[in-house]
Length: 147
Length: 32
Image (cartoon, rainbow over all chains, first blue to last red; front, side, top):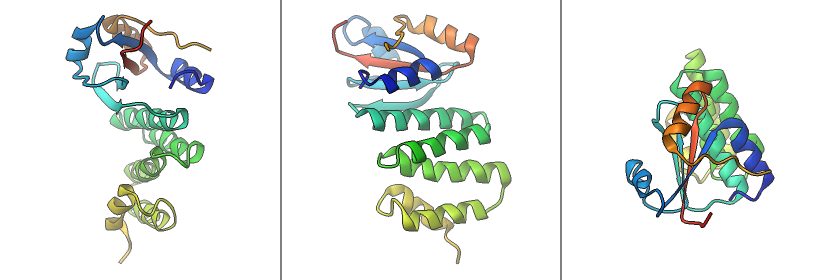
């Protein structure tokens, strides 16, 4: 996952990267409930889990997932504009990945959370009628469709 | 470009707290 220079640059820029080996640091594995390798865990600065990525992912998929992780971390602190930006990056920069529909959904949630305007959620539902129609995120958005 | 891996999770968390950045932990079975 890491030979891609885009991945290395992104991780160095946005995270404090730590590597734990399954045999050499078994206590760290148990502490965080890791059950497989590779597993990538994103923790907030207080050590709370933000995102868990189990198994190998190609570079674009991983980068999309890391955008989502940053979005969730911002959302956890109600930094809605930052969250929206990261969620939208998952959609715009990695549109063919699994992260994209999740980002589309949560970008709408971030906009709604900032504005309390239900039109934001209806707009997400409309977008899912055009894109990512067969995903679980599209199903979740159906409740927001206008009557 | 190489990732600047730390090897001590508690030190990484302390650094994250100081810098207000999240930690990315890579659990691996790969040598090195």
